[in-house]
Image (cartoon, rainbow, N blue to C red):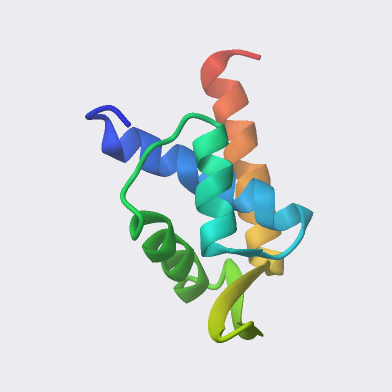
Length: 97
């Protein structure tokens, strides 16, 4: 990732909403998905972003056991469905499309 961390952080937040709207996600799965889209980041960054969006009420978190480890799985909430739709409208206005 380049030095424009704030800009990319906002794009990653939109990626979170996009992917969790398709179905529940967990941290490592999301990190791998971001890498496929060309994002490189510290391993902890997506976890703090997922946790932050859950704290704001956009995502709901639950623990699931997978083998010997428990992991947090994130689902979208109703406010989480509304926020990216509003952001998409604003981005379209900004880009003139």
